[in-house]
Length: 434
Ligand code: UDP
Image (cartoon, rainbow, N blue to C red; front, side, top):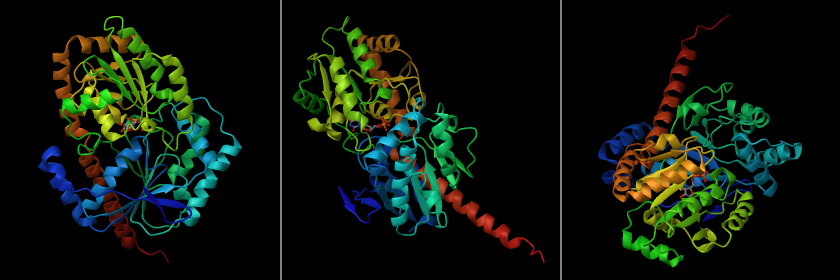
């Protein structure tokens, strides 16, 4: 649900969440930390800016983080940059190139990108204490609103390790205008990036959202049955956008190889179509062709009515949860799978090793062969799989819940305020030169 506030940006209408509800799951101590950190920040005006309100990990997280910021006493909002198709095509290329693809950056793409940002900047309204700009799509806003007050933070959700140099050189000056930048891991920061402050924050999942709330096995079985899946037979599941980096074709290869030993195995590939992802439909078609009308491969999306509850059910009903990405900033689907008590097989890239301990909470793989061997190990020994899943769930509880995410943001806000206070003190203490 969105409402139009200005021609430049849409403000997202958010549901209400209460921090107190999270205490029994996340633990009292994290809630106490949040309350302590939030005390001096009461009423602080916070604006998050991103490129879409639905689809993908960033939107998923903001739907929880911002209501929780409000519950902690901050006046937090979320706005969406308004772009046309050319803008989203350009930013999709930018996303791919920043993850390492060899793509051209044309003048038309630069123009489409800047045009949407200028448009947004011109209509920008309101005054904020903290403005958090997510990912490259709205990144130039800081430069375009240079004289605005408040602390500007760029939150990068992608893995820049192998970034295409042309795209990176284009983007870098926009990032350097920020007061701080948040990355998922130190490895993601480019050597030539000079920004005043860096923070490292892993993404997080909401344990109370319909996607992650407890669901009993019978209910999960009932739901997957509605989509033609037999819950009594082994099920491989990957939930992710239809995108080459997520390697759905590789997952189909894994399923085919596993079928040699488990002929009853089934595969569900679940992928939503995000509005900032024009490539999605095309890659969905490619995946569909590759599946070759195999009745045990289920390609499902939001267009089939698969929403958060259904994703929860599929992850819960899975024998094996996969995220065989070739590049991955973090991969929320891994934390989601671990939270359901499932060992997860993930590509050994980006933020995935941050979540999966190889052989302990899942398997890190680098090929179809390794992924197939890992899937077979899990399917052959369900008791071991169960034990691994239990360890994984505790790792998520400790590190990757929304409450930890909120605490990390509040810490950064506090540090920026302290920095500001000490700088203005030293400015005042400087002798005046005549
Ligand atoms: N997701 C979903 N339905 C789908 C596909 C994805 O709800 O059909 C969700 C998924 O559960 C996860 C998010 O979208 O919460 C994807 O985040 P992730 O970090 O894994 O990947 P991204 O899309 O941001 O690259």
